Image 1 (cartoon, rainbow, N blue to C red):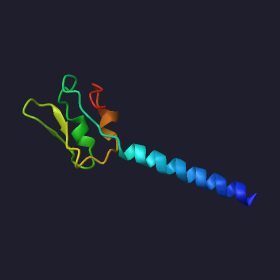
Image 2 (image 1 turned 90 degrees about the horizontal axis):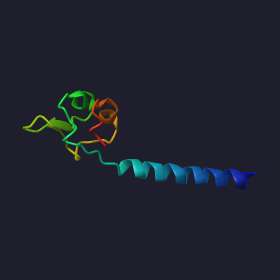
Image 3 (image 1 turned 30 degrees about the vertical axis):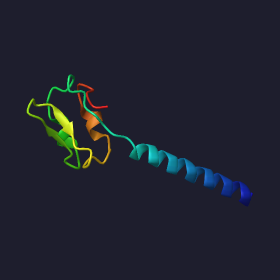
Image 4 (image 1 turned 90 degrees about the vertical axis):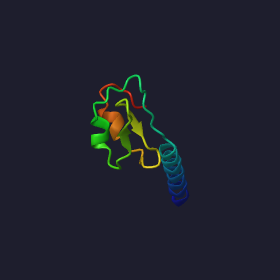
Length: 81
């Protein structure tokens, strides 16, 4: 019984570590042809990682991005992937 529980715990830890690694590797990008400059993404960004270029299109500063995905959820154009 203890051995089974230990094995299950090890598998759960391995799965959690794998999931965290894949999430941290995520990098969001913006399809400039789809972005309409609505500013919804920058309004919800908790790390102030989104700014707008001279054409009014959103740009993500990857060094500030925490990869939370909030911007993806609010983009009406589905321009963030």
